[in-house]
Image (cartoon, rainbow, N blue to C red):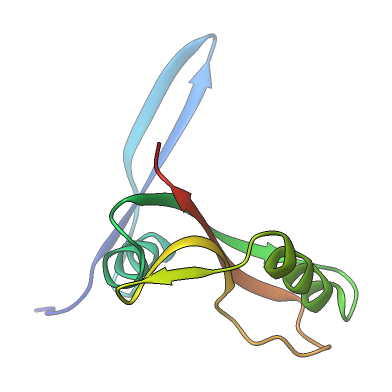
Length: 110
């Protein structure tokens, strides 16, 4: 018996010009990135906005921090009624040694 979060990974692809879907590549008895993205959206993103939830990687120390700082300057976060309506947010630690991150970038839906 199992009582908890279940994530199912699917795979799409093109073979000889035809699109295919493999509906169950893997079953995860844990939180998946897709589930985490959905929870972030439901709790923290305005329903009038759309955006991307991304994992990012940089090879050198300091690149992640520089990337995040640049994004914050060009796309500052705007919050209304406790929800992100526009802007950039890095969801992970930002130390000089950090190479991996999770970021969200949101804009108002048109």
